[in-house]
Structure formats: C-alpha cells, structure tokens
Image 1 (cartoon, rainbow, N blue to C red):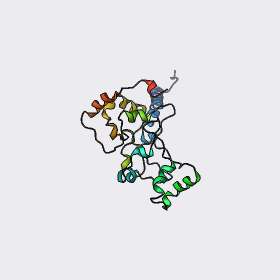
Image 2 (spheres, rainbow, N blue to C red):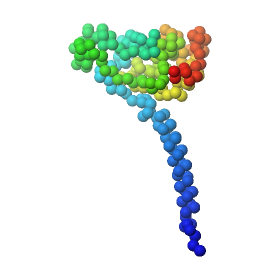
Image 3 (tube, rainbow, N blue to C red):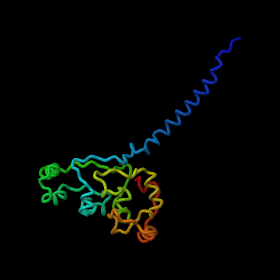
Image 4 (tube, rainbow, N blue to C red):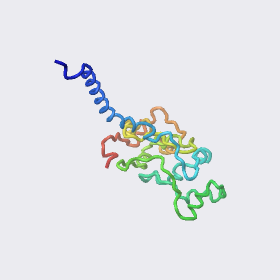
Length: 213
C-alpha cells in the first residue's frame, strides 16, 4: 500500500512549524526593536525651522542663558517657546533688515507667533515637569545635549521609558549646582552629584504614577 504522504512531508511540516514560530517571535520583537532605533526616536536628525536660529551663536558667542528665551522652565512643567517679542527685543536693533529674519518681523507685525517646530516631544500620556528637574539640579544638557554646539537643534536623547528610568534610579550622576544648570560647559566634580542629591532631597522615583497620572 502506498504511503498517504510523500517522504518529504515530515521535513516540510518541521520547516513550516519553525517558520510559524519565528514569524510569531518576529511579530512581537520587530516593533520593540523598531521603537529603539533612531528612526523611531528621532535622534540625530536636525529639524528645519521657519527661521534659522543658531544656538551656537546665541548661546556660545553671545552667552544668552537658556532661561532668557525659555522663560517658564524654572516655574512650569513646560519650558516655553520664546515669544516673538523676545526675539524682537534684540532684533529690532540688531540685524533688523536681514532677509533671514523676515518671518520674525512678519509674525511680530501680524501679532501671530513664529511657527517653531518641536524637537523634543513626549507622548500625551507622559507627565514631565521641567521646573522640578531644574530645581533639583538636573542640567539642560542631561536631556538636550550640547545645544550650544548645534547649528540646528537635534534630539540627542531617546526619551524612552527605559532611558528616563535609568536616570531616576541614579540621578546623582547628572546633578549640578543650581546656578550651573544652564551652563552647558560645566563638568561636575567627583562625588559632587551625591552631595547635591542629599542637599536637594532628591528622591529615586520609579513608581508608575511619577510619570503616568
């Protein structure tokens, strides 16, 4: 009596089962891997703005502090986008006829804000408070990198949940004196972070409600 299935059918079944298992694993793993790539996090990609604002010049050459433009960073969850009036406070006198600044002048005359494009954005279900971080000695560079060296601002940190938790588990590695929070060139002294953590009463907050409220 002839066999109901050809000899290669067992091999084909084994191959099919392996393919199905690998497909299921890939179905779960692929999104997890993708979300950790720079293409998903947006790292290293420069964001074009309606006005070419060069932080190297404003911060590095002119020494303008972060808080001058991001006025709410020390007292609000949001750092704040500079109002057009802030820009024109200088540029009504400096480079006031530059074609590059025409969008700023047009926004000022019309009373509408400059349509800046966000570089750092967290999901709506994540709560982040700039003021508490700045008030506990977390420097701007911890999240934003050396903005004073960027012609166009780019995202240097992934801002993933794992990245945030790593910092919350050991915030001492980033802390600086409060008067150095906006100093991009400041390098903490050995052991300084641990001393500042005690002085500031820094807590290691890793429970869900810290960020998900």
